[in-house]
Image 1 (cartoon, rainbow, N blue to C red):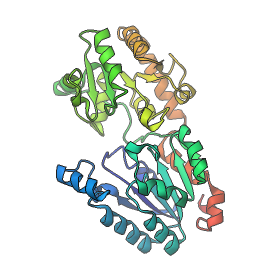
Image 2: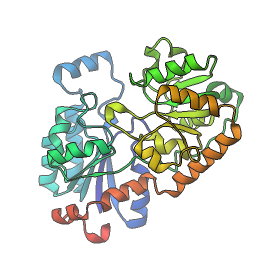
Image 3: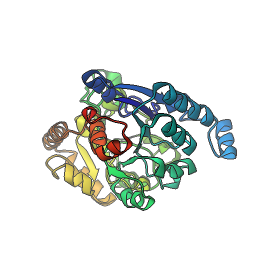
Image 4: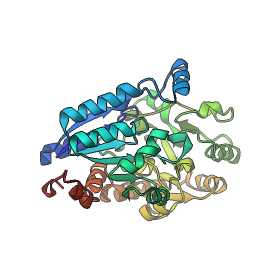
Amino acid sequence: MRILYFETTAYYPSSAHFLEALRELGAERGWSFEFVDQSAYIPTHSSLGQRIVARLLGRPSGYHALNKALLDRALEFHPNLVLIGKGQFISPDTLKAIREATGAVLVNWATDDPFNPCNTSPNLVNSIPLYDLYVSTKLAVIPDLKRVGVNNTYVRFGYKPEVHYPETLTSASEQDRFACEVAFIGGADADRVPYFEKLLRGIPGLKLVLYGGYWNRYPALRPYWRGEVFGREYRLAVAGAKIVVNLVRRGNRDDHVMRTFELPACGAFVLAERSVTHCELFKENVEAAFFSSPDEMVERIRYYLPRDEERRSIAEAGRREILAGHHTYRDRLLQIIESAPSVFGAAGAVPTECL
């Protein structure tokens, strides 16, 4: 089987999600794959001038080059399967041309809500019906996909064993930078801010650290912001915290996020927002702790901070559960492929022996 994979490495090594899995499966099963990296054409952090041009044109400056690169690679590689991660900047015309020229099955790996105005584009919405399979990480989005009429399935986020594992703070500088009582890793969504403002009022003097974008925009939280962390720094951020908070992203209609799997895989004691998926994955107060409001989050943190042994036991149990549960991105990739044999059969692109 030949797979053409498109996603971004802007948040490497967490993304692109399936690179390591494709390398493994290629070696084991004789699959071949090619990768097109969105970040080579469209930067994640654009300049003011680039943002102005994008606003005027309705698309980023690298849009045409990106679409040409994807189409050219498809024409050269002639894949059986094209796997598009999100695809916000992939035009419907590009997808149509790929299918016409190669007969490939088109699959979208939708890590954001395509109907969320903050995370979408006309290209993305108009392309949904063109996919043979639309894979969403959000259960709440599935009814909308059904209304569009696209074949769809729900697949959870996962973790990378090569990236997400326990790390140890080994130097004084690492202790100074990462050691804290409570940490949160993720962007400063407006609905997340009250949780940490309430926490600071509820536990004065708390050593809080916030990683991710835009926390510096909020004066009360700016002193606790430490930028973004990836790779080993991500693991150190987890290792340095007694408690790691996990909030879902309401704008994406999430009930779990990437950190749902990454944090316990890294050995964190996780205090997570209570949700259907979180409660299905973890036994409460055995493999993770939960909260349903800012007040309950503060109460849970106040309870667990002095209880080192209880936190350690829960963190170890949570990690065991994730490692035993087939939650890697290799597992997710196989789930995506194996979830739609009828689609592959109808398209005639992927032989049964490849699945």
